Amino acid sequence: MCQTGYADDDRRTASLPLLPSYRQECATCHIAYPPGMLPSTSWQGILKTLPHHYGVDASLDPVTVKSLSTWLTANAATKQERPAEDRITRTGWFIREHDEVSPAIWKLPKVKSASNCIACHTQSDKGDFNERSIHIPR
Image (cartoon, rainbow, N blue to C red; front, top):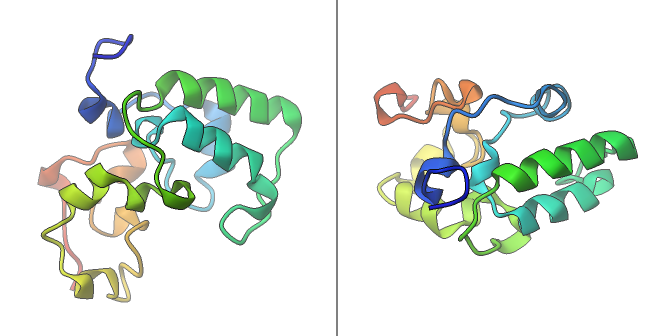
């Protein structure tokens, strides 16, 4: 258990109220991934490389970066090891959770990649990754 009272497995997809600046700055290009999906070291690495954020300049002012850093660190996974390139899709738990997904699904035009959560997890933009809201596109 972590300090907030729930296990890392629960933190990964917990429906946590989002920091307004996190939603504003991050969710304009992709869903606002729950902070528990990565350990704090990964979030810090991502914040340090915002000028080259997965091929896009996502630079932010230092005050916003500090605010995001504090919030992401406080709500990050506590026991997870840092994945390659700080990609959620390369974490052990992500791979285990999606092991039954055919490689062909990731290539569908409506999905495109494993990082496009909302393609299948229809409520992921609200932090809800419950299996009842999964719809695999055709």
